[in-house]
Image 1 (tube, rainbow, N blue to C red):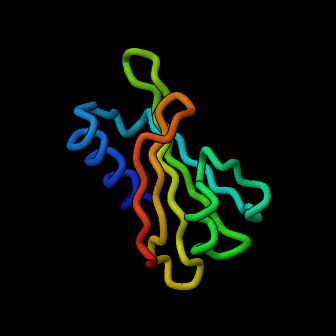
Image 2 (tube, rainbow, N blue to C red):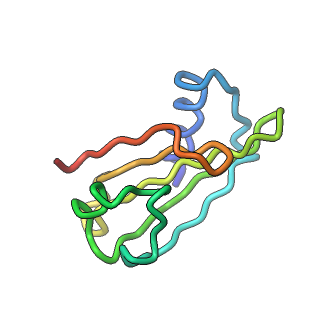
Image 3 (cartoon, helix red, strand yellow):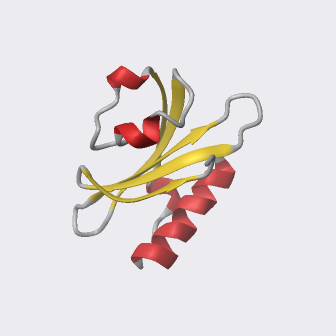
Length: 101
């Protein structure tokens, strides 16, 4: 997780211009089947390219203005290769990247 903590902090600084205190970042991991995932989190056209079920790992942070930021990423379980990432601010998707086209 440490590697992804650094990635999260660096991306928040470079992309969103927000300094992140690494001690304030939360981490969770969830297994989901496609039908359990909200279209706002991962659109159906993206889901069809991902494993089912899938493991979503998330890093979350609340900034100084009270906005909740979540970066979710899906890894190939055997290789740990990143397949997909999504960035959410206060429940709204603000960015995503598909790595397994």
